[in-house]
Each structure stands twice: as structure tokens, then as C-alpha cells.
Length: 131
Image 1 (spheres, one colour):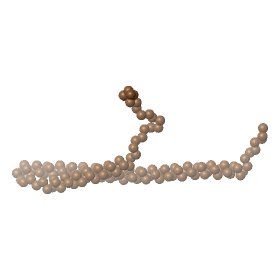
Image 2: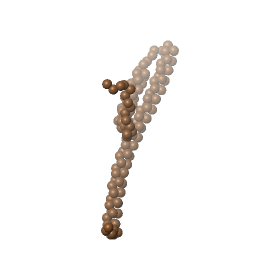
Image 3: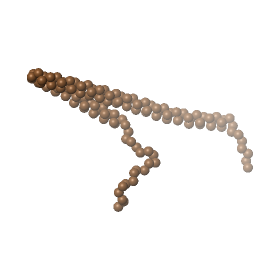
Image 4: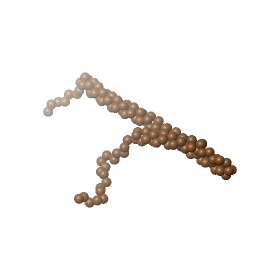
């Protein structure tokens, strides 16, 4: 049987250099993934902020419409002529807010990847007999 010789210093340095290069590649991969995650979090934060803003505006619009309805009821009770101008404007504003909220929710939904089943899971069995 041949006798094993210990690695030379040059061979040891080559092994160390190879290990360092391998680690650097892994660090680069992790850095790229972190940058992607940071971008995704920023996009989600912006989209959620927009949804939150639009939702808050819906609440404000509804409160204003409710107050205008109270005002109109008071006018009717006092026998005054009813002017629907303010209510019409508030309804138009609410419709615009609804459109903006729809857009914000669509934007947020577009950032969420579709759900994927866990690895190794099989689809549920059909309750119908095979033909």
C-alpha cells in the first residue's frame, strides 16, 4: 500500500482559497436574495399604505354622506325645499374613492404570488370513481 503524504503548504492554500471562493459565492447569493426581499417589502409597504389611505377615505366619505342625509332629513322636517347638490357631490367623491381603492387592492394583489402547495403534497383524491 502506498504511503500517504501530508498536503504541502501550497495544496493547503489552494484548499483554503477554494473554500473562501465557495463562501463568497454563497454570500453573493444571500445578498441578491436580500436585495430582492427588500424590494418586495418596499413594494408591499407602499401598496398597503395606499390601501390604508383609500380605506380611510371611504370611512370619511361615508361619514360625510351620513351627515348630509341628517341635514336633508332636517330640511324635510322643517318643510324646506331639499337640495341634493351636496349629496350628489359626496356620492361622486365616494365613487371616485371606491375606484381608487379598487386600484390599490388590485395593485396589492398583484404583488402577492399565487399560493403553491407544499412540496411533496399530492392533490386531493377525487370523490368520483374513475371511469
